[in-house]
Length: 76
Image 1 (cartoon, rainbow, N blue to C red):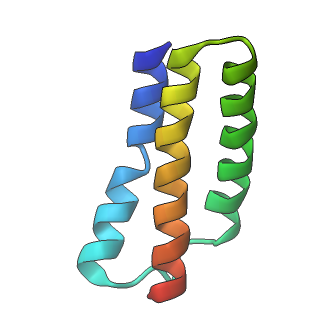
Image 2 (cartoon, rainbow, N blue to C red; image 1 turned 90 degrees about the vertical axis):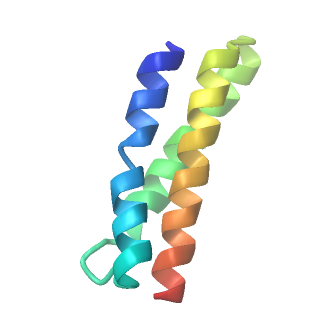
């Protein structure tokens, strides 16, 4: 579970890196990271309720990546 969640969350890194290098995120919709962050927050809550640390860790990292994208979108 932790590996699957980690690999899924790593999928955000290329967009974060590209945005940081180019300082341009015009082609990235703000809604995508917002909706995904909400979904991951719900998964995190579910993981907390069933005490599944792997679910919590993977989704916490995904939420962090989404928040970084949202902040970068607002800055750039």
